[in-house]
Length: 468
Image (cartoon, rainbow, N blue to C red; front, side, top):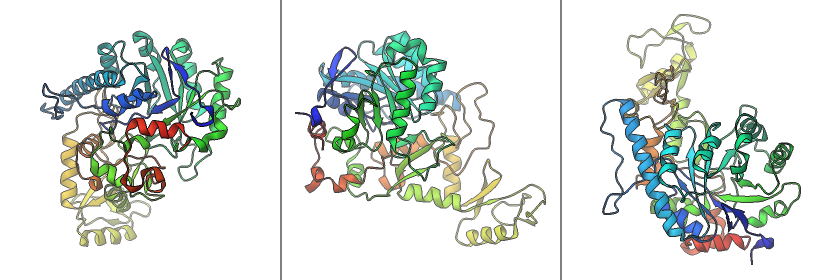
């Protein structure tokens, strides 16, 4: 028996539980996790964001970039991405054994997103049931889905964003829009869709926001049978009791991104799984250091604290003496002519005595102070850029037209491809970006995980279906 008589829904021509595994990029979900989730009767999601591919012996192929130019490395990245996602989908489909369904997830802001998505769908015809896609405004998602006859599930964070997508593109391919994923911008892990109108420090109740989304969908003639998928902050279904079978909201499904990380089939390294068990409330930080420019949520470990400290060691400057910028900066910048406020000169001199001797300019007419080692790492990472995003604030890369954002590379950010590849393949958890949803502290509190218990994906799905 499922919680509150939760019933299967019809998806891609089959009956599945209204439970979706959230797709987590760069190998945090793969064939093993998504295939097992589907085999348990839900919708598994293979991440098509720089997924791992395998050699003839089944070993992961390291993504090493040999080309000399960014544009050529970007082409290498696209080939890696297509090969990896195709490998993952085929393996997941085999594991699912005809049960549940397999979706793929793409980040619209990833480099070459459209090329990757088309390449994967071309080579996995009949295996992929749907495509979830967020991070940006993926207007072209519906036309790509139509070309390959797969469902699409846009990920949005407000009724307003959905309305814009629907009016511009999705109304033309309404029959393939299988669901709309509402991703709570304050609670979900990874990149979040907070707009400038919303306060990152003031979370809003998702219920009225999801009701507003359903109101927009109804006004556009979208039937209530098209589910809204609640994503972000979902742990126990019993806490969403008033959402299930609620005529105000129509059909609701639930996405789980964080809980599947701590399972036998989860591909993340054991050290990452161990860290999840230790988290306390407030240990996940909503921040804006990502080179995408989006807000994102990750564990506030040494990696994030270093980025916070780096931004704190920051002063504004001007190229000429003006306003309060009345003294010349005499540390960290060699003989360059930068003018700063007297109080900021004092701060800069203090940072230099602490070892932060190198001044680096940002796109916002400020200078940050870092150690020589940090400076060298930042510059090397910027040089090694392989174009993993459509627009990268850290390296000034853009994946089209003249291949530059036209802005100064931002040393307050980081190479996201480097750190996500490293943590997913056994790198130190404290020195890398560790994405997690804001409910991750519940691993420590939930009795299901006591005595170091790690469930299989089937045990997790069965547990979720009880309401717990």
